[in-house]
Image (cartoon, rainbow over the protein chains, first blue to last red):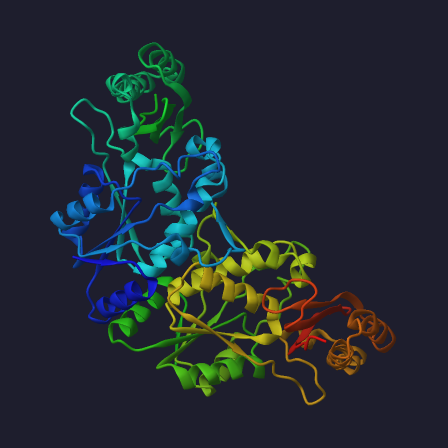
Length: 278
Length: 278
């Protein structure tokens, strides 16, 4: 496995692979790897000649009061896990390499960013779109892999690739969960012991909500009541939307999504399912 | 020469060329070709294995009261000229092919679009960025060619490519002029006979302004006075800015640019030069 930090070295490696006609699968991450990331690698490995994992905690997607500084980082552990998963190249640039000058241009997600996490994290998805566009142009992947846990991000990146004709595909990978149902997340390390015990209730709330929605009831109030009684976290949002359009009043493919703020970690989770029309 | 109208056919052709390791030069146009376009082709021909010319009158870059409907079009003449200039492929998609659905995402040029043509054509450069990004992803060129006549567009597209790490280069090509100095433009056909006689005064005004600026005087008022007395057109703007940053009070590389609205044609022109500090 190679670790490349400079854009120049990475682009040279990409050029060589492209020239040889072989394929690249890209797994973009912010590091602090867990089984969710490794399942992306596994799928990328099965579908491409080479797998690139980018590790970059992207300052552009954190708000001024968010957790950029204390986002967990452990490059040694990450590179060991990546090597064990047969990643071919880790691309881990510095912020100076990625953002050498203040950019005047921006990509906006529009209405897709007005709901769910976009509503409580203004500018977040613009930052995601900026770094993802840069990574796609640098890595020139045939396929890039994103987890369904970040379902809004996935929907927005699918729109990006389709609307701007990027010469590549996006593959969705299912959320990986702990045995008790908690979605794997780098931020789970910031849960207190008591919060960690409550955290599986998020997924339980989603399953409750799905049942309510399938029976034609409004799932949101039931879920909010359940979360309030079962956890100490503060509910940021609970929403039922169409997927991947993220519009209200779905009648086909739907997403139930939630965000709960605990003391030091904001957790998100979702389930995507088909609502039958009554 | 091949003419390809569908995205699918065009992408298949691009795939084959890329697989063979050969290079593509892209000349994006809105058709109604003149010598300016052909000089782009000539340079592309000299620097690449294949030259693609796109011909697409992009609805996204015209405002509601602008000249989209009566923008001049003559595909037969264009394809004859392109063939004579040894273009390999004309890519001429329909608007339905390019914009099959309403896009939620947008790219904004930010402050670079707040001056010159951007100030009088709101949304114009967002539309340019949208179509250019799509064309770059479809054609996957090694180099794309743009004329200096559209200097603001050139500056914005150079920023796009640099800030988002597109794996390609932008080459600037000098403005081609009629013998009397008028910059070649597809819109020149809409000048009346009297206006056509006045139109070279735009370039004369720029040369006057450059002389004034080099001598430390403010060129703008002199140029406006000259244009008002020598033409029947209405001045849209005359500005002196840094280039390519497009900020006020330049002291190095500078652009003097103007736009004049005639009865049925809005003409733009500019000169780029180095201002010596006193």
